[in-house]
Amino acid sequence: DSLKAAFPDQTAAIFIRPPSFETLRNRLVGRGTETKEALDIRLENAKKELLRADDYDHVVVNDDLDRDYEELLTLVKKLIN
Figure 1 (cartoon, one colour):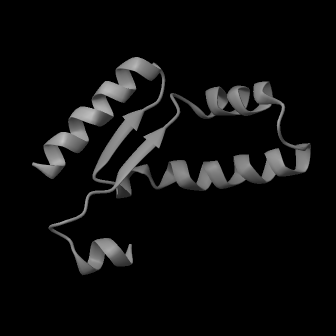
Figure 2 (cartoon, helix red, strand yellow):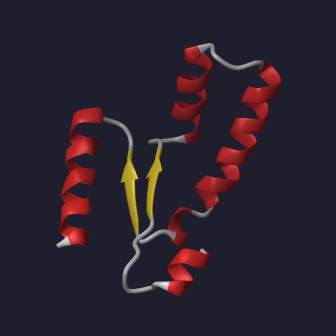
């Protein structure tokens, strides 16, 4: 927030969100890299972050890696030109 407040015309906030909270949960559980406690904390934080998605200038839904990469790349190129 402070960077955007200091340079409002020179910053853009991009939120990369999962297609759904359940998809995020399944992805994280499927990785098997976190303890149940760590996973619970991460999912609680994600709930709070997802509620703030509208605070961002742009939202990219992460559901198809190739397409989402192209969308993000196009967006960044547009923003820096």
